[in-house]
Image 1 (tube, one colour):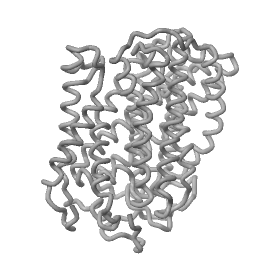
Image 2: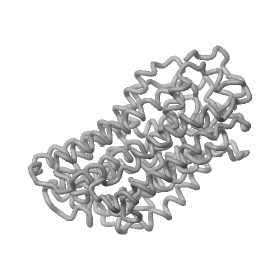
Image 3: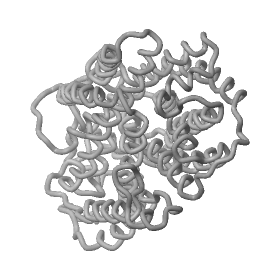
Image 4: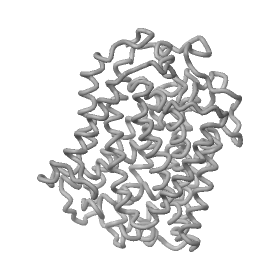
Length: 470
């Protein structure tokens, strides 16, 4: 795509204020276009931006579920984890590569394929799942680890981790990037030590009886975890120069997600083969296989990793909320929304301090249920616009009259049909797995295909936007 010569593309809302590369400064504005004078950073930074937040126990627990709950053998789990993670990481790289050219967050870019107001569907879902859902999941993970390490009460541990998480998200982009950078070596070394010990004690030859159903459930959970970052993709690349290599951006972002998720999930699967109450006391069971010093360091890393993850969750969740199109006449509107989400996420996390395993499995699958259809529409629309100059679509991102109802309709149809027919979790079992248990849960795969087909059929019918661009 050609890069505009005009510093401010026509019809684009520009983020106010001066931010630069300052770290301990609250990022001004909300989801507006980042002016070229404010662009900074290199593609390599995306590797630790996306590695650090996955070096935590929530990632490990995806692998634990594959063997302990879905009853796969270790090697079956490895394959399912690799497939699901590769799918989610690839789409993450593709979406990340668009950030430098457009200079806006992912959920603002989503307006191209959903229209300005139709985008309320995915942006609203992401605001809830990121700013509240994922925030609560990772807060519980960090609090339980801190509780095991310090023996402080669980609610107090939750307060401690939430305060740190919200502060980082409140300050914004530069502090988030800096935190991930400096957390990376600490987390990488500690989890590498834990991984070597766990894998050396594992019994990979242990049999499993999960069958095709368990395999598909694991693929869905692994995809849901990796793709859970997809709606944030451009949030952390929009500050890069438009001239930055798209290939480098996509490669480092995708590798960050794939390496961290695949390795830790495989280690989690291996830990179940050693023994212990992997579902009832997941954190304790995992660290119980480690020598005392390494176990304590791992608990510290789990807490730090949860903070790394939630710094992104509360930041991107707040931007998704602002991307709904609500007019907030506040210079620090994104930051204020981040603080509000942190409070709500804390209250939700309080209810998750018990029975975390079952709730986490259900949450992972629900994430995949909506992200699959959203991804289908976003990626297909991106492909169809591949030859359209950036200048011709930038103005649409902030045009309240722009409509593309093919997007929300396709996403809604894909979600409804796939959940009704193929959902398979504790709260609801779809029509197909209810009668054919070996099918497992393929709701995200079916939802992706249905939404892609519906969008391809309906998109030519939505007409032309005000600028005449299809």
